Image (cartoon, helix red, strand yellow):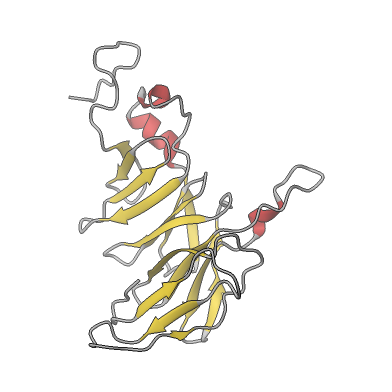
Length: 219
């Protein structure tokens, strides 16, 4: 990831040794440079190390991780859901801050992106889309699957019988602020209103020749 101040950051996936390490070089415009390790991320459990990485508008690195599935308590609650899955490196404090999320994400974060207005977005593994308006300190969950269904009623279960989008494997934001999400089972979906509503990119996702799955909004 490259920050607005040209700092370069990288993390490592699926490796032995100490996990949760992000490295930084201070000038992407320089012909050469040296990376140095930031302090370890204070995770509770981690499966595949640094899974997603971006920066906020202040050029602070923001990361998403996978965490272990630790079983369930006697009430059936998944124990890993309280593990932090997103962190931001606070430069003023010189330490990692665990982000709060409004709804826990199963397993962890798959992909992150920074919008032109500075908002941060991430997609969860088998869960939702998340948005931060405070530089990665907190995230609000958006359950985009029913919002796609509301705009394209026949969209499910026409694609291999999936009742929801599944995992979010990729996410990006264009110059207009439109958010695009690559999903496990529903193709590419997008929002042009900061996550309030979502629809499939494919205007012909619903079968026009089958009245049981016809989308009236499709041309």
